[in-house]
Length: 417
Ligand SMILES: Cc1cc2nc3c(=O)[nH]c(=O)nc-3n(C[C@H](O)[C@H](O)[C@H](O)COP(=O)(O)OP(=O)(O)OC[C@H]3O[C@@H](n4cnc5c(N)ncnc54)[C@H](O)[C@@H]3O)c2cc1C
Image 1 (cartoon, rainbow, N blue to C red):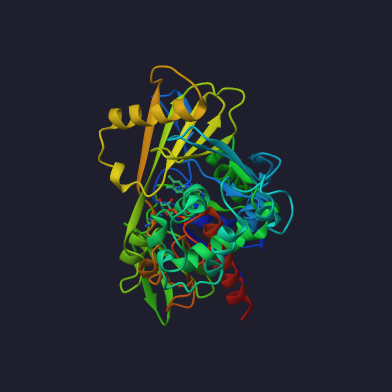
Image 2 (image 1 turned 45 degrees about the vertical axis):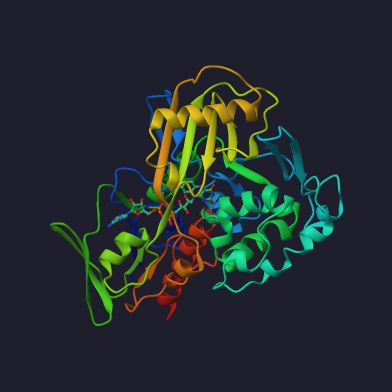
């Protein structure tokens, strides 16, 4: 019997489902609306800086098991690089103070007992006060669960949760924040080594997946937007791409791995998150100083994280709706001032690019988190994937891959049933 699966959307969730099913012997058809794979995790050539840049700096951690397994499955795990140890240098732009959080190499968070490795001016009791977050209910906001003030909050909890949840931490879902803390800080330094796709997101996480899929006989079509689905007898039986109609045989499966808005349009009545938050990235063509770490946490300024790449300094700002309408030149100047202070450099604004992803992630509040659907639908051969489905994690690459793997496993189970 032929085993065929149609994957709608070539973002990370769709690609991870496609790769898993192709490896299980399925004939795969990937349908992507745009002319490029990767979705919100992609690279492109930028004429302003004359460099290939990513739409956003993406940070993974060594404890992102599914994301790493996905990279391994497409042969690019070595392309995720970072410092040897789980060390996070920080700078406070208001005081000029610099420090390094050193989470060690173990599986237990023993660093909190060591004054020289934890955040300066914090004590053990500050860390123990975070305990209610660990098993917090999904319906509670972080602000009702822990004290969102004090040195430990400003220097570690706020930057970590802001980056992970993409909302101001007190309004974020304590359940999602708890999952992040359990899988990172609580899992010890072994799970917290920072990793980035140094050669670009597309080169490391996207293009090799497309190559592998094609080698396995998959058909990958771009500019092929799904416009409607037709259902009968409890299953999807047609995919409609404008004038082209693709019949879906009784045993064929469909994984819909598109963002919430198109998903809701294609499946009326589907409950999805409806509010989103922006992420702003700034890229500056500048050779980083030799002593600049690959990733620097920045507090007390506009910039939140500074990444150094060959020929380029790049910054990230989360929960950035307040910046999406700011004039670009003005924003670039403000960011460059922060970059100079953080990196200890001087100079006129170099060639730059600003990328504002308005709907970078769903809003990770308790209310929006409650709107995330699971992977199954009312139609027995249709499964959902995407960072916005109910993965138990905020919108991250790790969540995307988990959702893709989960949808693929359900397709495999359908075949066995
Ligand atoms: C600026 C930025 C920074 C980020 N930083 C991090 C980070 O540091 N660490 C981290 O882990 N995560 C980060 N993320 C989140 C991460 O990028 C996402 O969680 C992940 O890429 C989402 O993948 P996805 O497959 O779920 O969805 P998407 O990437 O949105 O993929 C969906 C795909 O479906 C396609 N599509 C839509 N409609 C149709 C249709 N009708 N027919 C066919 N195709 C369709 C889209 O074109 C798209 O390619 C960041 C995101 C952004 C935007």
